[in-house]
Length: 377
Image (tube, rainbow, N blue to C red):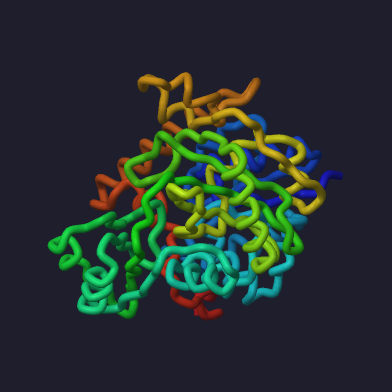
């Protein structure tokens, strides 16, 4: 009987690719999410999709559902793909199943994701990072912005570029109101080419790595088309990933960086979860094995894209092959459109941006979670 693997965050295209890769490697993937996740649910090649409660809206239900799922499935590994990774890590530490979770310990997860702590980590590891200052009040933020000159402002815990201000004028700076509960960072702006990388790590080593640029992004900043980067830039970023992997131990490390005019890589921020770099492995058996710590995988050298987001646009053919559809499995494309419609309706109904509506039920604000959060008492 094939080992089972639980892939959470089934709403994401990355989860679909990971599940297909695990199946290609002879494993039995199961997916789960607190959203309908039609993208994966309508696939013939991914695996069954289970539901759990929202860790934000119903944390006790989330905990109960995860506990039931682990008891029934007995997975060899739990692979998160979205921000539920933080909630899973907190629950795993409470319940004592951290060895199952494909992620670093909670404290290291938070260090990777918090923009100020990540900048400090990079300095300690000898990695190049722009000058970064945390601000918990408006006056300190304004002073730091004036001192640095050309800056980028963003919340410490933001995602998908939400609320990020690039080279803001004095009026925009004055409108930002950080606090102890909602700190912001002031970061010196590095000008150059925006790039990203994704790495899968086990035992402090990188088992899968892809570096890519994107000429097409959503309004929130998420990549829609993925162009593999060539040497020497890819090699430099792989070296950065190896340094971070040695510190993190296991899990997924995804970083945004800027390559300046001299070819130097400046790390901007990190997401310790799956990102678009997963799509550059073409749902291969090698990737499935790499995610289990059994092999190493190399990406393809051709562009890929989220088809529905670029179809009909000029230059769509150059964006590469669609990663949602697969031979004999066309329905995830329709499922993705249905999911997008649902999130759009939620956005209109709640007054949130589309990005906020897509992540409101799993978002992480950086606050520590106490064990009693997972209980109804």
